[in-house]
Length: 513
Image (cartoon, one colour):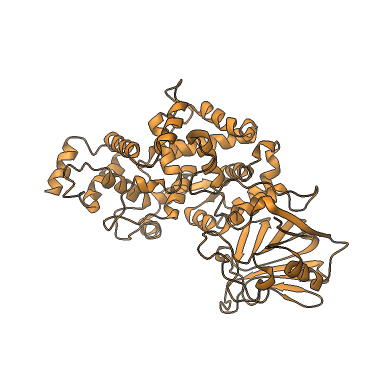
């Protein structure tokens, strides 16, 4: 009965691309994916133009932030426009360069569709979830954003053996007919099917597999493993996002000051130094572990521009630039990097520099630890700055301790265990690569003697300040390491390494209410 019903839909053309998109638009219109107020704001944009062109799109972004009036901002605006254009095409995926984004604009329905995919959590109103469907996670959302930024990966089609391996990596079920892009299409077909008798419910999702396979072939839908983000495109995109981390982005006139910070983040998304593209595995790792709040500026910008809201409900408001003296080592670009992983842990509007030491007036190790543990009023952010004497490469490392009075003896569990995104004690790196090395609960956060301070022990990541705090050594050990002894979790993608540099400055920051 069900199969004959599907055959009947096929014969009527109802399983063709345009009819599936039409039903998807209808589902979005009739759901809570968009509130009535948001729909009204979005439709108002089209009051004089039936199509939103790329130039008009970027002009609307520029009305929200002067960033998009600069040459760097215009490039970022073009990337965001291409991202939105791609999301409007889902579930019929393509590579962004296959569509001339200049020639075609966005209709009201296309923009509503793309924003429903772009905003976190809204796909739950589009895709049915239950025992007959896949569980959708935050990674599924990140993956679609990844696809919207990506191009075709160089190297052509993989061999059959490589394809089998990639399908196992990227697919929900290694026995399935395709990868995650296939399953997105299958989800939409299943979720938008016509149900005439609600007592019987929808036809099972698996019954539509052959329909989805036929649509993949007919519409030349690419495989997920072919997608990768060109590194320079990502750097430009991240520059924009770093500026948008703070609510005072209007005051930023020189976007280029964020280029090194953007490069540090982009480098952390590469599997190997020198790679020219970012793969999904590395993008997912980076979003989960290194920059969980990176995309918040993207969400807020779209919400402010098209939906009349300063921030989506599931996204934190933009941070306020911390007050501080001039010539701080923790510059605005470095502060924006901190926001990408500490937005849920630190009230940046209250963040204040408590102490600053240069190479000529470094404290003793005991005095520095005493300041961290006894003087700061709240959490402690200890920042170390310096340069490699042989290469001149600048380095910036630090430690975040939400409970400095206790983390030294034993790293505390999350202060608010039910608050998602609240970080426990962690080492971090800001330059020349951004990374976060989270502490193991119960392990001593640091050990001090009269000449040195050591953060961590055993394998994992260990940072040592020695020679009267004039020298810093940071090492990561993942090979043959003793997991039982490690204090700070390593980034396994980066393997074993050691960095040494002369300390040129130390800053301590904390919240002052």
